[in-house]
Image 1 (cartoon, rainbow, N blue to C red):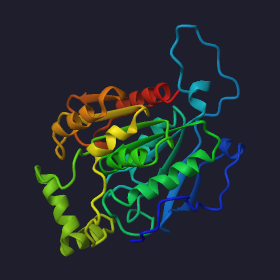
Image 2 (image 1 turned 45 degrees about the horizontal axis):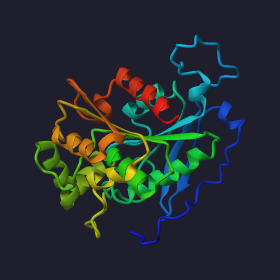
Image 3 (image 1 turned 180 degrees about the vertical axis):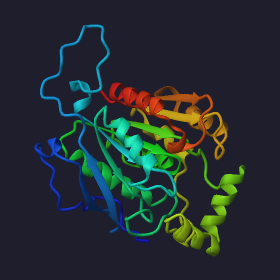
Length: 290
């Protein structure tokens, strides 16, 4: 892995303009600061030429001017990618609240490189956020799930001021957690040669064989650095990967600038986040990023 500093991102040659916002989705490869091609998709939000009049006490509708200048950048979980049905479903719901950028982390889907399970993935998200900014949207909201949830926290902490709100769903608070059976299986996939083979051919996820060096900033260490950027933490009370002490640690670290939703009956990440929850996230983000 490159040790080049995470500075400017060399993006694709696709140059967004105001007219592209009104066309079909755009798909391209972005190039990260360390040279990894990242498969990325831009879905325009609802085109509104004139916002309908509303009562003074009415909440903004998803198609009103309050959401037209918002772009959501969705960071999927481990073994996901931009084409997975659950990622497309989440993007479809959020598209009612603004434009949406989805992408595949390194080592996932059609992107290049190998997964570092949350470390160098910050560079992938940085490339996607910079691309999203180029579509003339005034506000950028990152929405991450599981591994992606940890990445959006670290990205906002390491690059203050680059996003306007952060939503982290089903994220861990600390590294190397092995307290549940699913996490023990994940560690086998990541740390064992035979596990990485299973991941490559069975899960379409290519994992780097090197250990972290240095160990990246943990999510719970990153959260205090987000202020004053609005932060929403979402976690299910039936999450089989990370029990409730993880979101509670994150919420405590966030203090007054963070909000925690503990969702009754919800499991883990994108698969467990139903359309109603994603819509509530969209509502929160449009309001918080204003």
